[in-house]
Length: 451
Picture 1 (cartoon, helix red, strand yellow):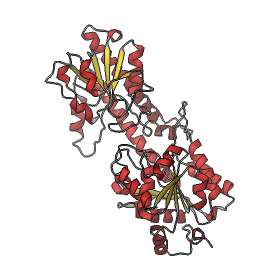
Picture 2 (tube, rainbow, N blue to C red):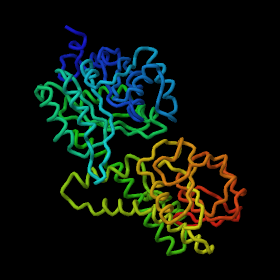
Picture 3 (cartoon, one colour):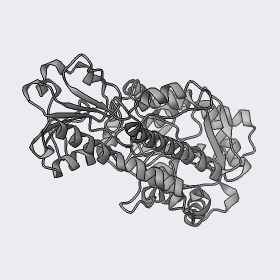
Picture 4 (spheres, rainbow, N blue to C red):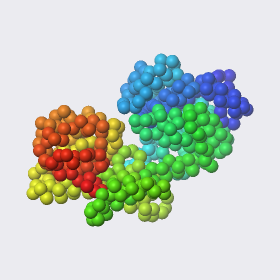
């Protein structure tokens, strides 16, 4: 009998303590499917915990890098060292074939992208492909863990039936649990190791118990067991939807503040001193691969109107155009036209310090300015180029060599603190993040939400 056949978790005769020891000693092999920005940190934490992890990724460059002990994920504190250490210790390795990884694993952890299509439909194709690979290697006693963010009901209605059908195993022979990642780029290891409680929910009580056991060893925080897998899926989606709706509220208040001739940022900060108020900050738009997508995991999944979620998306999607219109208004007041202006866009990524441009507000801002005839330049210390943006990328050190009629701060990278604003001739500045203090300059500054 192979080691793998002796060391199962789901519906095992072993005691909980024996299972815990088997997991921590490396007797229970783990496969992590997807070694991207969230997957590699998760695989590394699994590896430091149990010492027996293989990561699967279809990108051969990623696999080669990991097997060399190199880290392809940038700007993730501590990850370089952890990957190097776990690979050198034989605790972490990588393969290109998910099916190969599945053959030798007892715990299968899927953490792959779940984007939306151009029609705002959830795109689960990558996750479904991973489940087919897992099913090909699934054996009795295995546990399948879904860390991806998915529409509530996906595991119950799609993934579990797929695993049963493709593996020829009965429902009672393996476990399935949803343990949604609650991780942010730039602090992945901190988050995985316990910045927040971990949420687990299984398709049955045994799946939940085993997932709770495993994640109790990965995190220093508590593990919250919810009633089932659909509840766990909903928790993650609800977190993102709350933020999207709250930001939309802040953006609506920002527009009201213009009409009221007040600073909404000051009003929000003061309102939030009351413990029952937690209004987010307005800005030039909502970007990234999470918050702009998750409302559609509900809107498209269920046969309801969801007018609040839809309106919030419309409000947040309108902010890039609102930002550009402010540039145009201020230039007009200076007797200038957008079509005759050179505009600097500061920040192309959706978040400071994170090399991610999906749904970044800077993209429609650059496109709108270009369509209006502006000569658009961009600076972003995180990105090597401005591919996909209607802008000419400039290095930060070269900005002083150019004359600009306007500047738009979209993403407040730390490096922008070193910009010598006094070196520019007076211009219009739209501060999308309420992070600039240019009161000592002759620039005309508009802060989204108030002066």
